[in-house]
Amino acid sequence: MEQKRFHKSFTRQESIPDDAIERAMSVLRSGKLHRYNVEPGEAGEVAELETEFASYIGKKYCLACASCGSAMYLALKSAGVQRGEKVLCNAYTLAPVPGAIENAGADIELVEIREDYTINIDDLEGKAADEKAKWFLLSHMRGHIADMEKIQAVCERNGLFLIEDCAHTMGAEWNGRKSGSFGHVSCFSTQTYKHINSGEGGFLVTDDEELMARAILHSGSYMLYDRHLARPDLSVFNSLKKKIPNYSCRMDNLRAAILRPQLQRLDAQCLRWNERYRLLEEAIHSIQGLWCPPRDPRENFVGSSIQFSVCNDDSDSVRLFLEKCKERGVELKWFGNAEPVGFTSDYQSWEYFGSLPDLPDTNRVLARMCDMRIPLTFTLDDCRLIADILCEVAKETLKPGGL
Ligand SMILES: *Cc1c(COP(=O)(O)O)cnc(C)c1O
Image (cartoon, rainbow, N blue to C red; front, side, top):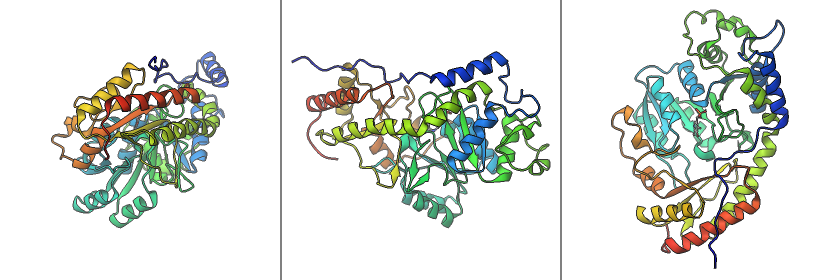
């Protein structure tokens, strides 16, 4: 029997929709790409987008940024994180998150992961108390949302200031509330592999007027902050405007023009991701040797990628499984690699923090976890084919056994 093979690219996103292209063309024709290059009384694409995004999340204020990494950096600075202070953060996250913490001059205190890939809330609480940390940057890594009511309770008990990294949860909800509406301030990404695509880009949202004024000034508003729409009253800026340095992290009108029509479609796109996710999840549930953690019914996630664990303990069989999948065209990422490659790195590769403590739970979970993108260019039939390949390769390479 001929072996099944998959031929599509895991990095090919859908085209930018025609109405977004039209909008971008009109910005290009105007030559007015800078967000503050507007006529008197004209809002501009970035300012309009900020209003639309704030209203989508249900927050008062929104700042569009050059990236989610820069939004997180601005969030930390604007919240008042001081040099040398500790920021609690998931050990399982992507490089821009520790990068933003380092950029703000802070130290990182890593929190363990659970078997279901969410943050370990008990470890969080222990470390919040021991380290007397004030700051918590919670990364909903790969869209896995922890119990947000519990997280909020831990933050309240320990006086933790919560910043959400929603790079993979734009459009997602916990218990009927939008991801990003729990934190004091929350950050989103519009980088190509996230849920709306402008190549690079990000948002910061909050209800805190002083924090927002600081963030706008930090982002590089050239004293033109009155041109923002999703901003606090101008009086809030008065005492701050000479005290806040410009870090030039703005978004431009071209990217905003591409994003506005995509934001309108976001909820519909999330449903398409989840159809694909559910199909793959169900298939993986029936594959011996693989384990896909059940999702909490309160978690209305966006399945733009899927993670599952290989039940075998030795990294050689994980490696073999990944290699054989790749030979058949199924590209999986692996956080268990000793060397950081292509978007994945584990916390041990963040050497710029000096020596980081060993985290046994995170090591064990990441050593077995496989990670697969689900671009919307994949049809449901494509997902069925991928599931068949995973099943065949698991049979070939994995010994039966449990986690
Ligand atoms: C992509 C990503 C970011 C940052 O995104 P950029 O816009 O590329 O800076 C932050 N956190 C997580 C978990 C991500 O996956």
